[in-house]
Amino acid sequence: MSANATVTVEVGLGDRAYDILIGPGLLSRAGTEISRRLPGTRAAVVTDDNVATTHLETLQAGLEQGGIEPAIITLPAGEKTKSFAHLEEVVDGVLAARLERGDVVIALGGGVIGDLAGFAAGIVRRGMNFVQIPTSLLAQVDSSVGGKTGINSARGKNLVGVFHQPKLVLADTEVLDTLPIREFRAGYAELAKYGLIDRPDFFAWLEENWGQVFAGGPERAQAIAEACRAKADVVARDEFETGDRALLNLGHTFGHALEAATRYDSARLVHGEGVAIGMALAYRFSSRLNLASPDDAARVEAHFRAVGLPWRMTDIPGELPDAEALLAFITQDKKVSRGALTFILTHGIGQAFIARDVPASEVLSFLKENHPGRQESRPDRRKSRPGQQSSSPG
Image 1 (cartoon, rainbow, N blue to C red):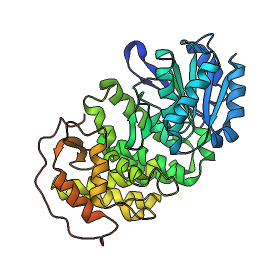
Image 2 (cartoon, rainbow, N blue to C red):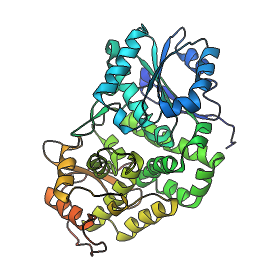
Image 3 (cartoon, rainbow, N blue to C red):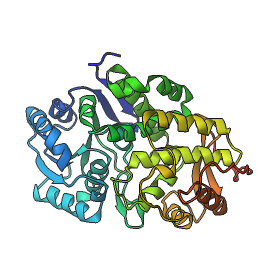
């Protein structure tokens, strides 16, 4: 793959299908690409302070070149922006710009801006067009694709939102060169997730090539495209997460609980770091329940250590609530159904499955054993499999 090539990945949703374009220079071509699909449209760009400083001028020029002069809505950066107050600010900004239902809301930013702007687009005038221009690796490989939008509540992450598919995703690989290394690593966790779910060859490829992915060049675009194909395949099969799309939540039940426990303080933990720790915990928990080999958990942990990601709760600075409080955050998570704890567990690398009736007592015991308040390396106590699994990912 050439470093300058643009790759197109289609999300196949019938008459609502859309393209993910991956490659350099897409900010400058944004107006042309959007106008080609939505001729005559007007737009509002939703972004944050940090991204605006670095990329807004380039995007505005690219939009104007395609005949689009956007209204600009700039918000504070950070996870705490995913709130009711800022949702109202975006909705009011779109209405103040007198945009109509056939116009477009453009998200320029990472996962926070994409989730928030997409939610606003989904509810203003009962649903407006939406374009994702993700500027973080995490957003390019995960949150910008698939139509899940929302905001956080004091009771948990992403508990308020809608499914609202974009019309187009523009993943400009050049913008990743401006990311702080911590943010790039956090996005890499979501990249690795696709290998750990059902693409063991991809995870093995990442183990060999992660250095080139971090350095840039063709391996980076290749990895992003593979992750987008993986997610697009799942979304096309299960748009509204009634079946195996839930596999994409590998690590997220533990991770969301840890994010809520740190009050979404990005100085302590960002989303991708929470997912990395959550995936390592999911593999370790699977080993504890005698579902997978401890060697698989060790392999995941070793890879995360190699790339500089946290992989255990003790890697989170500051104190965490006790295990009972962490379990309370887990039971509040939207992946809990009628009180039954649902986790994505695994039989090995690339063999994730949905376990829908995991006993809360097992989770609590596991959290206590892995809590920073306890010393590590207590031997695993092997348990029997928790209930029935869903069909394995294909």
